[in-house]
Length: 79
Image (cartoon, rainbow, N blue to C red):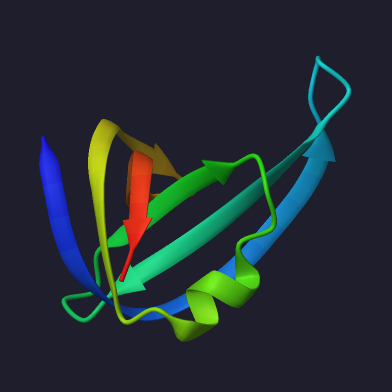
């Protein structure tokens, strides 16, 4: 499913080397309705996120983490 949302807040949760020896960055984003989105990116998009107010993405899966519902997103486009 495609989703478009206004970004209320974001943070770089962690970064780590993946099995291909390149970096992966894990961002958590929250929209104005309180929905939480998790985005695994192959680059540090902190600067792009600080300038963006909206995002569009594809929801890959819904999951629970520490009793919190999260949407894992891919193909993120920041506006």
